[in-house]
Length: 145
Image (cartoon, rainbow, N blue to C red; front, side, top):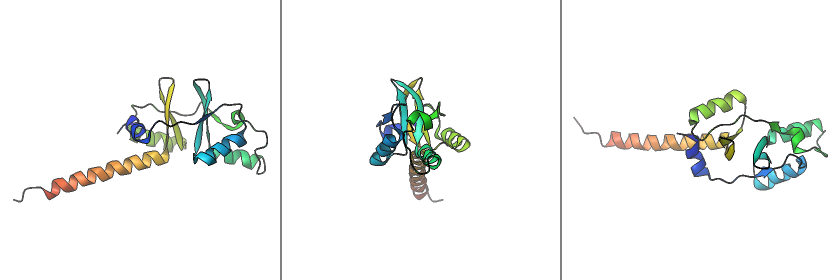
C-alpha cells in the first residue's frame, strides 16, 4: 500500500499556520480542531511542522506558559517528509527511526497532506482485516479432497 492510498481515504483537509503566529494561538487552533500538528507555511512553501510535542516542550521551558513565543521559535524546521508513492512499510520505518508522529507528504515541493502515526495504524489494520476476510473466504470455498 502506498501513502497516496491513505491520503485518498483520509481526505485532503490541511490546516496551516504562518511562522510569525503566536504559539499560543496555534495551540488554540490545534485544540479546537482536535489536531496533533499544523504545517508551518510561508506562502506556498512549507517551512516547518508544529506538533503537540513542540507545544509541550515550549510550555515546559516557559514554566507552563507560551507567552509571546512565535511558531518559528518552537517549530521543527525542515521536517522529515515522505512522498505519495512511498510504501507504508517504509513510512512506518521512517516514523519509528526519526520519532516523527506526523509527516508531511510532498509531491516534489508541493505539500499534499500530512500523515499521522494513527493514520498509518488505521490503514494497516484495515488492510489486514481485508486480507483476513479474503483468505477465510478462499479457505472456506476450498474444494474438499
